[in-house]
Length: 171
Length: 281
Image (tube, chains in turn green, cyan):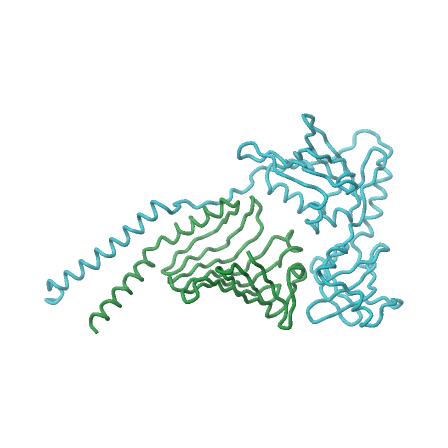
């Protein structure tokens, strides 16, 4: 019993130390570098490193040098077996309002070790409320519209069944 | 206190500290070897936009009456009274209405725009439009033939079909030596970016890493773009005095295209630089 207790303590200490010393800001810079290769750049007002998280405030998303969207807060959180990316108040440029929903109030992408090949998506905004999953193994995306808002600009991409509107795509 | 300095305790403490140090060292190696130490930010476009004025110094008698026509059109442009509501289909998830605008009927879904007004929703006998944070109520025309809900449902297209039914309004016309672009045509392309690429192919021109302009790959015959006089292999250098050397500059022009009264393109055709000028009516 003593041995089990000691092992658990060591594992806990390793887990905690990995998260504590993780260079979160540099990991974010590396993500920025990867995105920059695709002509996507993120300009942020501030970066706050937490124990388990990294919070970016007032992020502007540039695609090929064009400021297409602004995010009030972007929060990366990880405890290794559970990770999430929370987006607060994503507003797209006025010129794109006919193509994509103008406002996403909250969006959350979560991943946990119990289903490692699935990414869950939840969001709400001017388009309504959505819930969905991205299945990495099958390379499938399915997003269900739980509550429908103004989605006229994306309706041509959606399908309707007895449960309501949904978006499905293989990639 | 004696317990703290017990050899076993000291050994454990040194072990923990060594472990933390090793872990920190490992992260440090990862950081130095594989992670980016620098924040990559998009540089704001500092290049100032050149002032663009179009001044007619020559006494051109043809252009003057056209301007008068332009002003007359402007007075009625943007008026809600131009929109006549013919039919309504109102479901829980979407409102679709048929309106008459400039003697042409058009089917609109929630969020679609016409004459600068956005369809927000519909009631049993009215449609609600918005413009500049103000709401406008348009009542169903009394003499409309489509008065029953069932008959209207039959005529309501699915959203997928609706896209193909969007007609391009307006034309490019030649008035003497001046080409006049109908404002509604410009508005249409400002709201339907996809329709631009159906008629014209645009590719970037680069010298090394620097963007030098945008080249026309193809122009669809009989399209409004062909009537503008743009040809294949033309390179667009500037629009209304704004040099087009970045996607941001091009997007800036696209965003403001609804607000311009004149359009001036500087293009390179072969080795010759040309200026194409248009009036927007």
